[in-house]
Image (tube, rainbow, N blue to C red):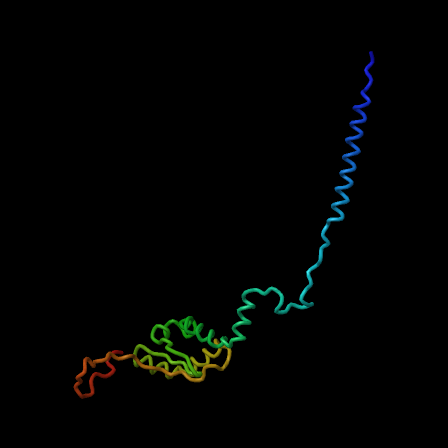
Length: 167
């Protein structure tokens, strides 16, 4: 007896293949139809401007310039980097106190250093203006050492009192 292949098996295989092809065709067609058309984002312009994403340093620089803080930040940097600007030896004896109206007030720890700073004032003012980047400093006021107050209580004895004996 020779076995003949079952006709139903061939038909079943052909049927499965045709269904698979049909589904593949429909799925492929569906994919083609359902593809989202890519839209390229419109650039704000040919050149970067404020609508484009900005780095933090650009944003901070713009904020500083809009608010007029540039000189104030440079002055604060001067206070922070005082020893690097004027030198370690001067910085040990002279401290910046305030800056207002183009006037820097510094205080020396002795009358000798106060005199020295008064002599060096034009040179130091020039160096500080180089650091500030503009002529924002015109005058440097040098204060001598703070003397100890001998006044205690409500009553006081008249007289000259102590002089500069602390430096």
